[in-house]
Amino acid sequence: MPNSDSTDHLLLQIIHGEDEAVNRLLERYRPKLRRMIEVYLDPRVAARADASDVVQEALAEAAIRLPEFARQTDFPFYPWLRNLAWERVLQLHRRHIGAAKRSVNRESLPSGVASEHSVWQLAKWVTARESSPSERKIREERSRALIESLQLIPGHYREIVVLRHIEELKFEEIAVILKLGMEAVRSRYRRALERLQTILEQQGLELS
Image 1 (cartoon, rainbow, N blue to C red):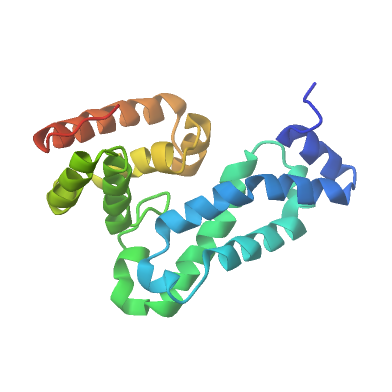
Image 2 (image 1 turned 45 degrees about the vertical axis):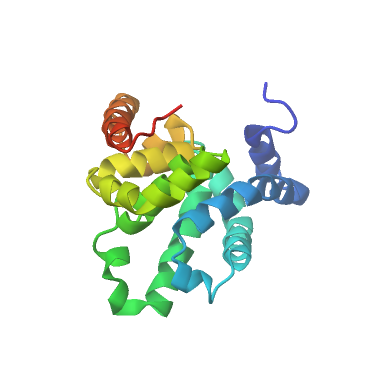
């Protein structure tokens, strides 16, 4: 039996008409949703649209749709919630950047990871591990070269590392988002790490 604070238990309460369970469930995922939005929001869009507003809009829609969703027990909760937020991210890019931002519409990967964002986020993730003064200097000096190297990794490999390590999603959630089986997800992830490690070794860096 799920504990009283579990997502499954809260969804059960929502089915039974307990409105407070809606707020408790959505507030639990607010920080994770905000992190996801900050990962993909183009800086040009972020200058005009606050990530907090995007989160609030997604949560407001989720609150309306949750009772119906809760009755559908065959779909994981967070990938559903994430999709609501992602649609708003796409809308903002189309509205504020438009045709000049064709990568959002045409070149986006299946989970919605824009190619240039996945490169930048991976570089940020790797270099954030370097904390000493000398490492920070190395980080500044190698940042451009690292980004150029990361562009050599196939997009679907960058995508899965971003989902796993930057969004911090479970493999089960990634499988739903990418519409892949678990074995395919794990296999792609292993190959992605191998490619990434090769790139980093060329830059004198490593994954820990």
